[in-house]
Image (cartoon, rainbow, N blue to C red; front, side):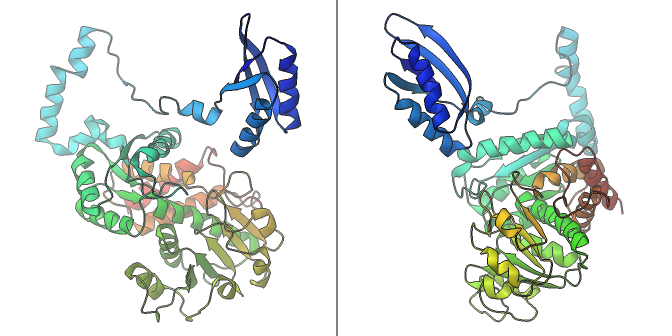
Length: 449
């Protein structure tokens, strides 16, 4: 906080006291400017969260003789000017450098590609480039906030691609939510990229966009909200079932949420050998007998709920081995977990607030995971997508297959060794030195088959 105060150095002590009384921790206080009429004081302090930061600001403003002039926090500071940049990989210091990297030398390379189009991956950035495409219609848990507001998220995604996959990714935020326009826009930019990562596009539009692009493009199209989530959930489930000593084919699974993530999770679980899955949405269990379902939910119901269970989440959860939530906060009461089968597994993945508080769920469940970093067993897409695209690009793959996704999930799960595996450690850290290499190798290996 930058403060304007009266010319009384005792005010600085009062400010520190006010912050401490409000539960904050002062790390630095500096008098930036001093005049005959006013002091300018910079105060740096730690807060528990954004809401607490506002409480500290209010406490300081209440000190007599103090005006809070400006407030900034470190989250906003690291976003100033954006988080990514373009850098040259070759020197451009002399006229000779310019003649090689640009004209006239570049003309020879362009003609070589024109004569042999396959060389474009070898002689340009295409072989290591991914477009991160969004329309801003389903950004994190924030909803339809538009392409401009989505840009910080897409920048972050591009930074993660570079950090964990050594991939050059570009945020592409489209100012349209028309399916035809999105498909056409991605088709038009595709020649410059080796892969397309669809991101934060609302269901059911995302299903059609992905399907049409996969049909029309000769580069892989991957919707991370669907398939990245499905891969990490399957990896986590594989290890959770190892902990509770249950077989994947015998486990009864309840999935809360029939949107993009829920649909992809269900399809990958079925491909992995899960036999009994029931999907629950706001109106209850999806059942093929229900003629009022949307086309997307009708397809999902036709693949699941073989015993035609009905009712809401509480009823369907009775006797289930696994709960997977990709829906909404606080819809699962902790005591309902007690009605599940012995040693239940609970994945509450809604972000930022999960379906059930993980600490409360742990009173009843054998294994609990969430999408949050402040609890054990974070299920995070970052474990999957950098390695997936690294493998796709290395193999020059034209598409993403179910076999690839199954192998990627297996690779993530196996990074956790038997001697490390326990109820509080079913997933490796995103910073594990082997996880992204393991996923890339699994993807490239299955592509070669």
